Image 1: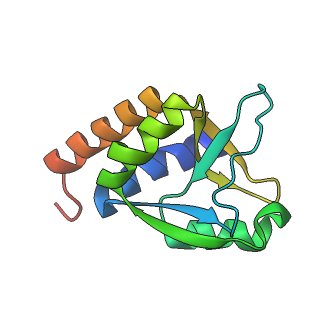
Image 2 (image 1 turned 90 degrees about the vertical axis):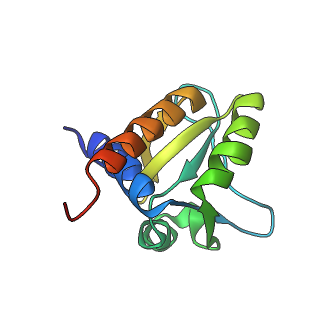
Image 3 (image 1 turned 180 degrees about the vertical axis):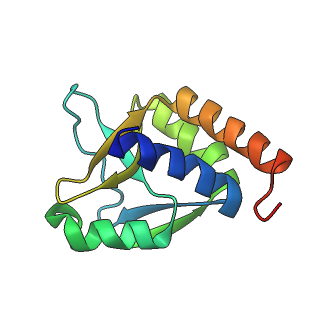
Length: 126
């Protein structure tokens, strides 16, 4: 599995378990940079530590702060807005260039629902 693939798998597993999503923001809001395919993507991370790491390592995010989002709010409010606006969902981007996988909203929802079903069947520690 690629580095980005491993990051994506960790994202859905961690979000299903901890029920939170993280993004970064500054006074202008959350970033949504242009991807190599010519579409904008809003990045999200599965933990505060991952969001803080991107702030430390990616110069474009150095002035930003982490923002915690409840997974239910993310699915009910954030994702429909991203879909309406034609944005992709960036998953656990990493490195100085803040790169990783970008998902269509519907694909991100399907992956999260599958991870939640798996987590309900096999909760941590069992």
